[in-house]
Amino acid sequence: MASADSSPPPPPYWLLIAVLSSSLPLRPEVSLRLYQAAFRLHRSGENVERLQGDLLRGKVIRLHKDLAIGSVVGPAFEAEISTEAGEGVVHFLLTRQGLEQGEEDAASGQSKPELPLPSRGGKWLN
Image (cartoon, rainbow, N blue to C red; front, side, top):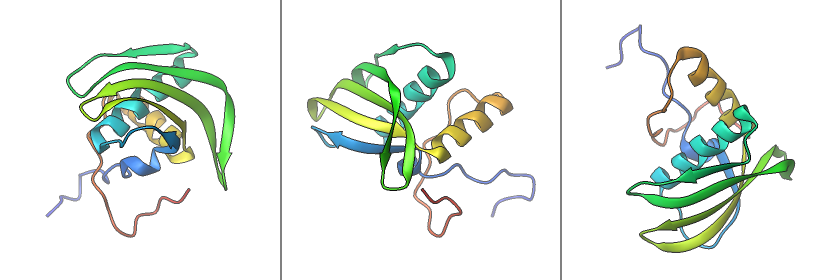
């Protein structure tokens, strides 16, 4: 049982980014890592972030434009990655919820959000 002092859980990872296309399947941990890199690029104004770790290697590139999928609009990114599932390219955007969550995390001093777990009936809508 959660205490009254605990903060609400972060939104599920699939609300943080919207994948436009991917040439390989994305595990939740990889999606979260792409989100983290993209948010840092968006916030800092930098163009490329290199990814290096056990889960994936590659880079995330800021595309300097906003894209839309239906009513979901946000800054666009491209990732060239290598994972245990293979090598591929992912095109995605940061959602409004992803931008809000990143700003909340930055304001609270939390640099690396925990992997959000799937939830049912949350308040987040794209």
